[in-house]
Image (cartoon, rainbow, N blue to C red):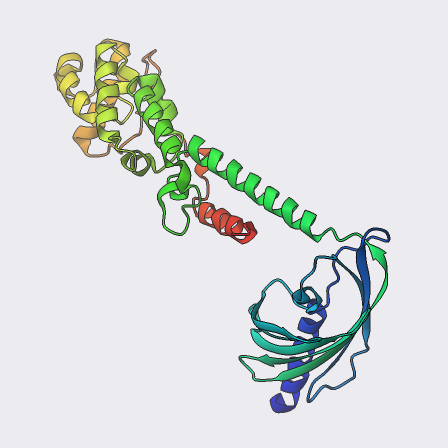
Amino acid sequence: MRARCRPIVHAFTLATLAVALLAPGSVSAQGKDDLWEVTTKMSMPGMPMAIPAQTNRVCVGKDRGDDRFVPKQDDCQLLDNRRAGNKYTFRMDCAGKEPSTVDGEITFGGNAYDGKMHMTMKKSKDTMDMSFSGKRVADCTDTSKQQVASAKAQAEKGLADSCRGGIDRLQWQLFFGDKSAVCAAQQKDFCARAAKVAQDMREPAGYRTGKQITMDLATSFSKCGQDLAGVTDAACKRAVATRNWGFVGGGDCDADVRAQATLHCAGGLGTSPDPQFYALCSRNAAISRGTAAAGTAPASGSASTATPAPAPAPPAADKGQGSVQQGVDALRKLLPF
């Protein structure tokens, strides 16, 4: 049963691939280029039924090369081609789900041509033959160059937007990664942004904002010679100097918590007659119990009127870090270089 089904399956697959090779280009009824009417026929060993001939119209520019008359899809690459008299021969390698090699030739007349191709599937070794012929039927305007230029412009804009967003969100992978570093040319701008964020974070208010930019802030800083630990220490020292005890007790300043608790918390533990020290003393108690998690503020519910600084939420820009690489791969497919 499987042996009989296999030729049918491959026949269908090859026929589908062949149809993809024949996709027509943009056609306009008027212009200075040549409108060709192209008819194709396909056949292969074991084909259960005949595939009807197909006719399409394709606009080809006056400045075309012979390769413009070769039916091919985007994942096919010309390996060898040459012109001798009125005969053009070529060889292609096609990727995709069903990789194949293609050998073919085209014979040109005045306003007509005839061609044939032989396709061999790399995996199954199945083969298929295609014959095609074309004749010039009218004038037209070939817009393929404009379409390529438009696609390139869109790809460049998409890359520029991604790089700007990567700088804003300090996504170092776009600038310093290996295959993903599509914005490597803008490392200087990235580091200027990192330096600005690092400077702002030396103040408690700027620190909270900076921590929400990216979940991998330490790596982003290190790529540009910035030290997150040093920045954190500076922010904590500034919080102590300005008596911002909510920040000190917020989970990033534990060394300062231990030092200040001996001065402001009863018995150096977790209580204080002054509500302004609630966050500080509660954090110290959690550290003493071994239940303090880095970067988390004390739980609410105390009689203190002081409001502990909230723990930074996972930044929206970094939700799904794996999507960064996927976005980069998509961009690379769009780029024509």
